[in-house]
Length: 223
Image 1 (cartoon, one colour):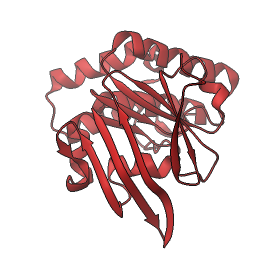
Image 2 (tube, rainbow, N blue to C red):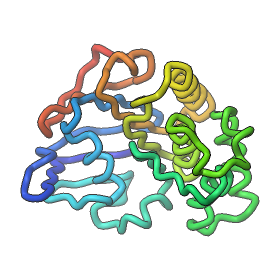
Image 3 (cartoon, rainbow, N blue to C red):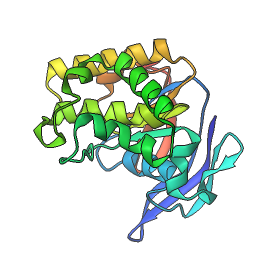
Image 4 (cartoon, one colour):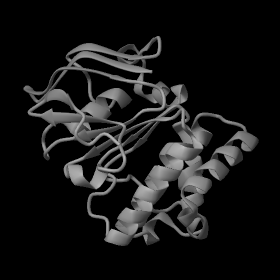
């Protein structure tokens, strides 16, 4: 599915990722654990093409992502929910969810099918569909960002610090949504970043530890 091979990234002259090597198999859920500043967000942004790589490879099946423009990567079936949510405040929740699919030029029937599938995973979104993005709490925005990522993420979804700052009730709902996602879409690969490893203890099939830009694999949290 995704091969990360000797990936190095520098930001403002500082090396943030150091020769990262890892492989995400189809249907695998990965917990990417590391302290703030370890490089977790940079790794996800590298996959999405939002920060340039200094060297290495990112092979999504046979497609070299480093040679693929950022705006084309979602068309490969990769969805991304950034840490800061990026919800458009003047659009309704429904329009926020539909927007990336409309940008991809999907048919109305396909958009509705993907929307229905996202609502099956996150039923809490349905009563919020008519609400404006500006009316959402931070936790609700995280749920909308997850739903939006699922609209384009038919093969892989990247979730950056999704549980950070969530009230316990919303955090539990989010974890339950991930559980439903694993059941309903077993072929989907998911990478979730988190600073607190214990929050993902019951979730991952594989755990990556990122420290000072270097990656190691750990099976202590494997479910």
